[in-house]
Length: 253
Image 1 (cartoon, one colour):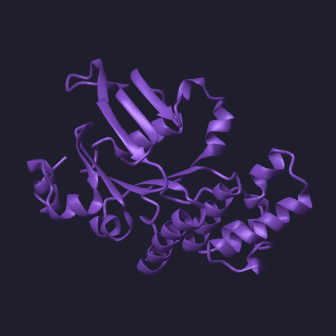
Image 2 (image 1 turned 90 degrees about the horizontal axis):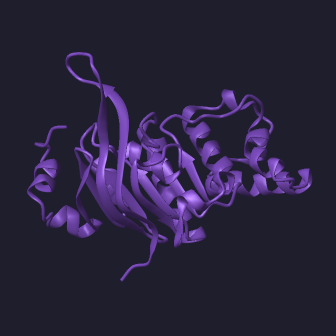
């Protein structure tokens, strides 16, 4: 049995909303989710738009807390962990790269500098990381906003990796990229898993991406887990009729 990095036990997420009459109500975004994410593997989170995929990632980084249930990281309840420590251990990369004003070097060394790492050591680490994500070291002195979107996304990854995370959460990380840049990010994800042993959890709406890189699939619909399975089994013999409809492009939100 594969060891779990993250476990969710009966997790429900609610948010304020309004009904058709404009009255304030409560919307259930995720409903009694019980699942796990294997350590050292890539899990793709799939489902139609509005299923709660990105909301699930937000819970894993405590950008939101569930209304009920328990989220466990390596045996520890997320609520018992220091929030800053948690976000170093669990890094997040968004759809669009969110870089700070300043140089690429300043972006990548931001986290280490906050932790009191010596400037020379932080710079050396930045040089290693920019090479790891497939960029040249001469970009370190460039303004971050002068790079292409694909390059910025790699710098965003390097900045996250500078915190030495154990888990990477990626929310549609290739949605703003051209096909070549998207392929580079997917290759990098596989490389990070094999080289660093990272656990990666990524949301994508592109099934071919999940087929290419995922070890496991979590398929959710209307805020509920429909199927959690090894990727090969999910794509070749999905068990649930809703999974079958989704793979055939016939399942709406």
